[in-house]
Length: 559
Image 1 (tube, rainbow, N blue to C red):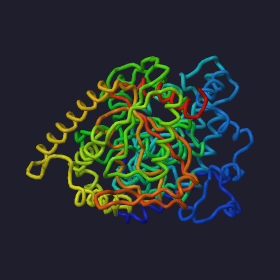
Image 2: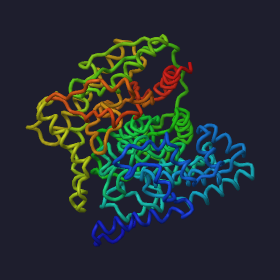
Image 3: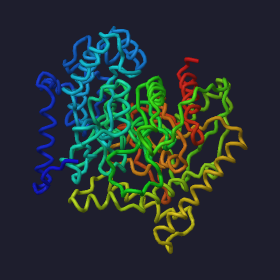
Image 4: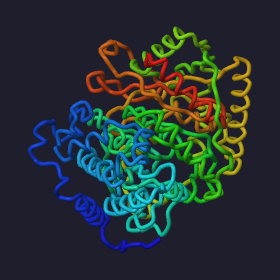
């Protein structure tokens, strides 16, 4: 890695970087001043739905053809049009570069833009196509990537002062594979400080806004991806997930997101702020898209390349073709006593299970004692706490903690003080002893879930994705309903399903002393996307995706 001078005050370095990033957007792609008269500003302090209001169309930056390219195709139909020559890679890449540039000006979702390089690659791909060749199954497809993936010649700052100015000398394995498959990498997306909070805000790039409601956060840590895809600034994006970091942006921004089993999708060779070797709850790379077609295309094409040949941290297991039963046995994870659900989340879960039961699926209510969300969350965050790496990075570089990071710590401390621990006391143990105890408890929970699965003959489970929908900036806090699945290492998928509406206005939500969660403000949240979460046992990723497709169709009345 090449590094820049760090003797300059960080505020000056940040201002310079932000100016350089802004100047990479061509003047003809800049939103005119008069545009902002259509919205309440500053956006972060007011409720603006940039998707519903068609802000990108109103900007006037994209041509009619470019709007059609970015709005009228699924990932599969886009790839088909590129392969047949109905669309050129150059025009598709240009359309998405322009749309991403507008999205950046609206919600601050990008960290790096590679517009010129992407256009040159697209022109190369078009020359191949003219010769009757395709670079691969992703020929000409623009794909966005989270900032922690290295892309040769760019920076992977992950929003931390300690990594500013370091230029990546090689690309992460997953990026290498995507390029080999024919993709065009054109932007990198924003993350929260330390990549361990659920509000994508840091001292280097600033705050990303939720395009569905700019007064709310987009989730994290892949929040830039969620926001960009919600604005159709990318047809397919790749994030990472260690506590919900793919799924939370998906639920906040109204997209689909899939967290695979660990060690299936290449996750090595990336920028991290953790201590090397401290990987006990494994991070996973996973896709976000506006439909499950994009998610499936990602997995099918990726595994054709045998990713284990590029990344020694993953297992050499091909993507399997599976079929599922017409009628499923679906377990339902209920509200955890310490993490009450806000009215829209509770209603959405009830609506989904009612519809699925009416479609002929068998619904099996599970108990909170069986599902052990509190215990699994404690295992996950207890393990994270054993690694001081991120904290050391902040302290050594003088990187002030952002509000969301402080709030997360306060929420955890409040839960500990008022609810106690559901795990055996580890206070007398050293770090190795604590790790062993946490790993033992994790193994016990996985064994209990195996028994639970068999005893109820389950095919899949449906669960709340979070206590809330997207919430106001810096207030999301702990993510128990996603983190518990990271601790168990179960593949899981977010399906958008409805929005906060009038039926949620009178719902009650009051936190007791031993409970934590975001505040509920119906007026602010009204209109926010709602969703459900699905999961299966470890390494049943293919089954999870196929059943998610089936459930998605049933919920939307397309069966």
